[in-house]
Image (cartoon, rainbow, N blue to C red; front, side, top):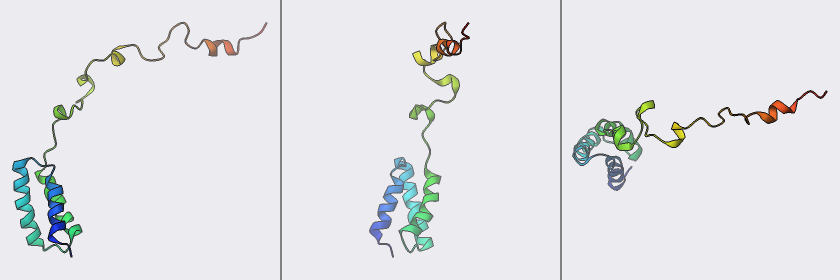
Length: 104
């Protein structure tokens, strides 16, 4: 049987990633769900609370996490604007071209 301390720690861990208004609503819903199900341990409490927590969590926008939206959304850089590495020039492949040169 789980102690109240274990379930409170689990509840605090699941509520940590939520915004304060959502955290209060989640904690109220979590206490109601735990009382309704009569959980016997922290594992059973997690199985009840994890899907409930996902309902209150809003993922951050791509702008706030600095993740690109697509191909054209990246910042310009010297690496992406320059020629590709190994671009053809007169010296590229000289060793391979001369390796099997026919001897006359």
